[in-house]
Image (cartoon, rainbow, N blue to C red; front, side):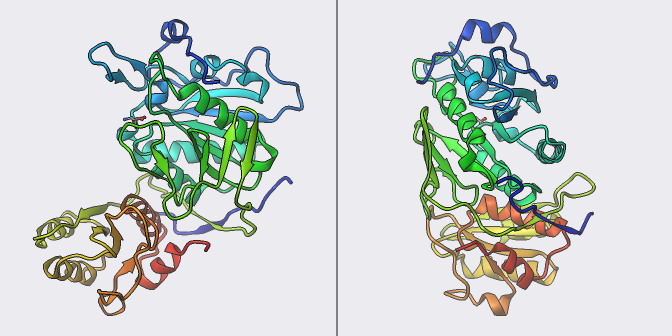
Length: 374
Ligand code: ASP
């Protein structure tokens, strides 16, 4: 595994429309990569260049007649998605590539690495000023946080999804995609790195989480709020762009992130799931703890066994907001545990995977890497 850490570059340069469903379906198929394709009627030569990378999800889904809310995700390819949004070609010179076509419940290391490599390459070769990734909403926060930790550039990378597929009366995909391109192309987005645009809001990868199973307003950043707002005419950030360079973690050389398991805490909990994770070879265990990252005495004793075997143990929480603090009801110093602070279990898992892949397993160093920018 590659164990070096690369310094992230500092800033380098200073209408919901109805989907044209018939046209979209005509060319819909999954899988193969598209060649970049300039849009007809594109903006002028000096317009910002936005590369759209399509991965699937409801935003590329189409309604299914089997039930009132049924649909098939990942039916429509990236180029067709872009073509289905009236006026989008005036925002930027847009090209589109298909990276995958999956529901984001099937998002995996392979696609993540492919995305990260393609984005680094596009910025290093100066092919784009900003990137938009169309993505399913189930795990969009994980992909955003992964890219935030590994990308070498601070140029804007905007992830976008939709809660409703094309072909439904209230499809939110076209407007979300329009606004994502608007944010990626905006001069105000320079130096802001990875963001998520959903339902007129702009969120940071560390804070955003899905808070509703089906509502259009499904996303929130409970500990921080949105970092900005977007509508078809304006982009407004309410937080300053990050001023300091940050470290980017290296991608695993063997193409696979190490195994880190999440164990969900509950009343009447024993240590068996934790012992199974140890026996299965997990390199890290994240506890989705109760309250301030708590777990039963038996569960804590099993976590002690994990630490003794050199496994990284992180206490996170199953609660939607707040921080998990060190040494409150659990003596983390004595036990060798790490706390996730504001990172929810799925993001704590991801960061632990990346740290272990970079050879960082000492609890003190892991804890340091979990620190935010507040
Ligand atoms: N299951 C879908 C996905 O994450 C849901 C969505 O995109 O809204 O791909």
